[in-house]
Amino acid sequence: MTRRFILSLLFTLLLVASTAWAVTLTMFQATLEGASVRVDWEVLNENGLSSFELYRKGATDANFDRLSVVVPTGQRRYQYLDANLYRGTAGTASTNSGPYTYRLLVKTTSGDQVYTTILSQTPSAVQRSWGSIKSMFR
Image (cartoon, rainbow, N blue to C red; front, side):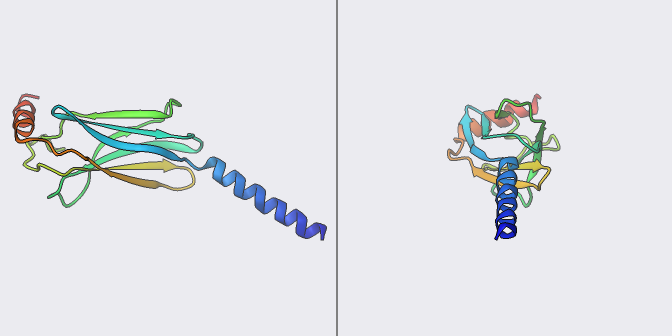
């Protein structure tokens, strides 16, 4: 009986420890701000977290393009401003008008976690044109 109790207790402690070390994402959203997109995310804890990788994909893109790698700083809430929405990642003008999907790869010591969000608003033709013009001069 005591052996079974000890094994049960050890299993419970391992389960609690593994959930305590897991990174929990509490918010991940993309919001249109003029000709840019603000991507916000928040984590409950950063135990075992090594980095965040943010990716973007347009409606006609075959693959996600990596936008940024963010090293955790302990602030729990992070933000990225995608000011190059109308420029491809290689520096060329993008003809894609959306919808845009953002993917957040959370790299942890216990394994990677992937989250996605879709930009809820679609940029207007004026915003797309202005964004394309601005991207030519960057």
